[in-house]
Amino acid sequence: METYYNPADLKKFGNIGEFQKEFADKFFTYYGAVFAEGALTAREKSLIALAVAHAVQCPYCIDAYSADTLEKGCTEPEMMEAVHVAAAIRGGATLVHGVQMMNKVKELSM
Image 1 (tube, helix red, strand yellow):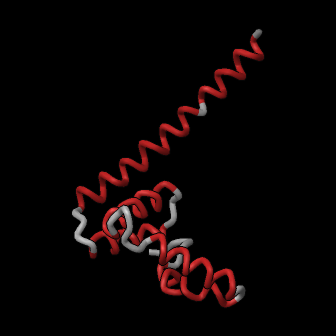
Image 2: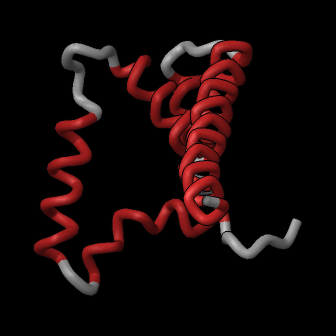
């Protein structure tokens, strides 16, 4: 299947430092620290990452965290539920901004 996003590019993510090593190194240090076990388990963090990947619509992240959540023992229903949580939050965020529109319309209608 042809796509704008080349799935093979995901394997090149580590190469982002080629044009700016200092920032890439800092990012990967931060990224590693964020995904280390802490108050949340690695499994929980992976499910959060999968949900966020869908919310920001990053096909590379969706591929990476679909695999990662499976590796960490997540079930397909858990993964889909995480996606639905992201969809609900994204939809709610869109709808709540409707209040801003309503406020503006009321202001202009006065």
